[in-house]
Length: 265
Image (cartoon, rainbow, N blue to C red; front, side):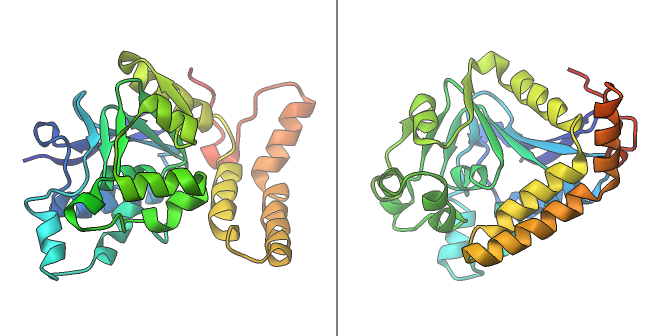
C-alpha cells in the first residue's frame, strides 16, 4: 500500500512519500506517518538536515487520496487540524528541510512543499492547487503561507484558477530555489544538504526559528526579539569555535555537530 519512509545519508535524513503506484497520494495513515517522520528528525541529534522527496519519477505528491482522505474530511469525521504535524503548522522542527520535487506536486503535496525551507525541482515537475475544482480549499497551510511567500496576484491565480504550472514558472514565481535535470535531482538535494551539515547547527536552528516566529510581530517587538536570538547565537559554543577557526584559518568543528562534522561534498 505504501507509506512514508525515513532513510539516512550520513547526517541527512531522507523522508519519502512512498506510494508511487498512486502518485504518492496521501492516505490517512500516511499523514500520521509524515508527522511522525518530521518529529523523528526533530528529536534525533544525529540528523542535521532533512530532504523530503517522492518515490518514483512521476510524482512528488499529488495530495490527499480522493478516495479516502478527502471523503473523511468531507464527512466531518475529523477536521484538517489533525494533519497539522504533517503540514508543519506550529512546527518546532528548526532543522533545515529541503524539498526535492521529482514530478507532480499538487494539492496537499504543494501545501507540504510550502512548509519546507529550500526547494529544488526536476525540470519535469508540475505544480498546482486544484482544490477549488472539486469544491474544497487548500487549507493545509496554503491559505496562510502562499501570499506570504510569493506575490499576491500569482498566489491568488494559483488558488482560484487551479491551473498547473511548470517548474520554470514555479521558479519565476519564487516558489523554488533551483530547477535541475530530473536525473540530477536527488544528488543536487544531497549536495545542498551536506553543505548545510558542515555549518553551525546552532546558527541554522536559530535562523529558522527566528524567521518563523518573528514574521507576524510588530516591527519594534520583532527587532527586540531578533536581538535576543542574535545574542543566543553570539554567546554559543558554536560561535566561540567558529571565531577561533576563522582566526586560525582552519575548518570549524562545531560543538552542535559533535565537534567532528566536516564537509563531505
